[in-house]
Length: 399
Ligand code: AMP
Image (spheres, rainbow, N blue to C red):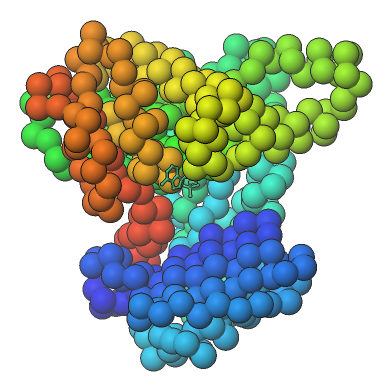
């Protein structure tokens, strides 16, 4: 192995595949691509390399065909995978269930276990399995590594991961709080910790705010709480997901509105959140409508902020104080309005955002709190692909 050998990172979803070719040590991105709308009309492919983006249509029907398309993109536009000393392939896998607490080299048995976990993540794990199978066929001579969204939270303390339901039932059906976005929370918290020399354990709250949103409380690098649960539906308000609701809502909707379990699932996962409140799931549109005095958009913004404050206060209590708050994800990195609103009124917790620092856009990690703020507030751009590439390289190096 050479330290300049690249890792191919693959993130296979139900109708799209994203991929990135990265040199883990230097973080250099050699190529970056997306295949959207697999098996649907109007499929789009985009491959970026050497500062140029090559876009076009495709008719890939499934993930196997999409992987073939990826190799064609590399063959046509480069870099030439045959010439590169590819180190390994890293796969993002959403659910590792109770079985995977760390990145894992993929064998037939590992793949079978990931497939068995599909009941816990019916939308995500089958796509990851298909992506892994297709990639192993194409790139069979290098190690493949699965990096799980849940792994960082595998060691959540028992009090945090336990739902108050009958224990035997929970054990039989593997019901616990798993947590998601773990690769991102771990990565941004690590970057933020590098910025301080702490005398004692560092107490951090990370907010990953994108289409999906989650919060985590982290004590000295280890997670002690997170807002997502058995599924990625629990917690914060998201683009189309409700986040926390009264669990009694399900049976109430069944009785009062005649909705079945799948209807409620669809309602809370696809029709709720920003979309349910303001009619649009894109936060930029919510901001625009709010600026145009749209009442629903203003309320949606306020509900998002209210829930974020709720978690911030709860995690402050669980951590016994706070050293850093970190914002990341498309919303967390790009919306000064949202960050200012969350921090507003929290001087009593020792938290003050500096308006100029907060308003300054940048693509690097940065401090946005005031000099006299006891709690450091940071914006740290997430890079899940780089984190996956590095974890994959570390395991591949063990060969
Ligand atoms: P992600 O899933 O991390 O790509 O984040 C997607 C979310 O980030 C969407 O709701 C976008 O509207 C939001 N977003 C992206 N850019 C901005 C921006 N400049 N200001 C506010 N929200 C943004």
